[in-house]
Image 1 (cartoon, rainbow, N blue to C red):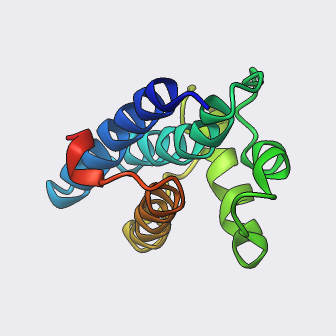
Image 2: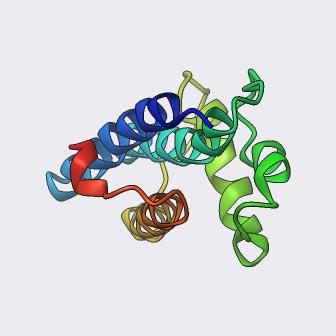
Length: 133
């Protein structure tokens, strides 16, 4: 087990989550918040792989990553969120002609999910989230 590597992934996930929350509270651009939410979820899930010294795939697809860690965390009730948040990585990271940004309501919903996911991962891995700040 590699607790150090796992904690490094969770520290970065915390940074993304805290940034997303800060930007949301400041009524910032939802496309930027969406990308931070994506990275929080991606890094939270990859923390399981780091802990187990498994190869960390170079993918941003949360559904694919979820399949790799489904023995550690059950997210079958949240697959729609994982798909939605994965789209943020592509759609919101790069300029797209005539796209609409996610609504604040949508961002609030996925931000709450990202926070839930981060806290659940910390609990499963027995990590005090305060130690990651």
